[in-house]
Length: 488
Image (cartoon, rainbow, N blue to C red):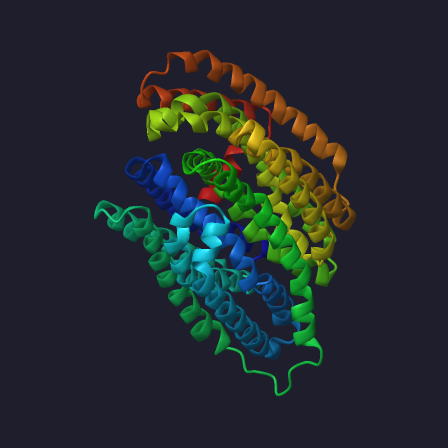
């Protein structure tokens, strides 16, 4: 199988798993929103947001760092891989034990300090959440380093299905938001156990460990985790601190509105995340082999396809946000409509980020990306503190879009310095995509006022999709034969 076929195969596996994960997440989102009301929904995801911040101290970028070195050493000195895995797991266990102990000991104090004493049970159970979530994500990222994305796909799909089954069951049994949280814990626990089992039997035992651990390798592993930690910390500030601050400054219902808007954008972004996760290990391999022309071709093609899909999707999402949220989740969630409309701009930005960020790590540019992410994350934090008390949840969404625009621009510049992208051709293609989007938007705007039920809503979405598809084919941006070959 050549490299391109391998990428397509990995993308299919990842996309299928992501589809299962996002379908289960969408169903989970629907059930929880219906049964918990905005206050309960917000309380659950506020607690998860706080724990995501705490998770930073239990990982420190080690998972991504070992994936990078696995990708490199499986080509040059595979005997070092068992040593790399053992070092990483040992370090993670020490960190997890410390963070979990602190969380159990001080969960009530932390909840009071954050202004929500009722969150204490979530934080106490959060010690379990941190352990099982870490196991699940570590195995996924490790498989990415081995470029065996099918296994990453399996772990992700299992975590999504497990969360759905157990969270819905506990909520329907009347256990409320805390029950839903324990459903998350069980789902991640099952996925983590299976992922670590595959990692041990299928990979760790496969390699004969070198007699000696390469001098300085463990130090480089830990050192490379530092910029990744900075990047991940900044990423968490971008993605979670706004949710935490909304809970601090406003109320659980506002958290529910904001969370729902962000979850819808996550669902829309699944294909771009799958593509970025799939192609990124190849950049490290190609750079090591001096094949930058091939890396440039893959990146430019992927970026063009992402823009072709996500610019129209973002515009369409902003247009139908009102009827979509109120008809699917109920009139109680009308407060999420303006949030989703603002975050539609974030969809395009995050799609580019999903394609680019992991690629920079594998190209060895994690330090530069960490600096950019750190700067924009601090700006996002400051803007959130200013805008949330004055503008509300819309201010949080606006801060996210503004700061992420700067981050995307820096990322693209770093990629350009590595791969020497054809900027003129990319600009010309982007202009054509915007033209197609304008025609599609007019078609959707004409039919949206007629929407009065879910069937008509899906009809309006179909009008936009058909308009986009016809124009994309006529413009030459989409080759139907190529699409059929990829699907087949």
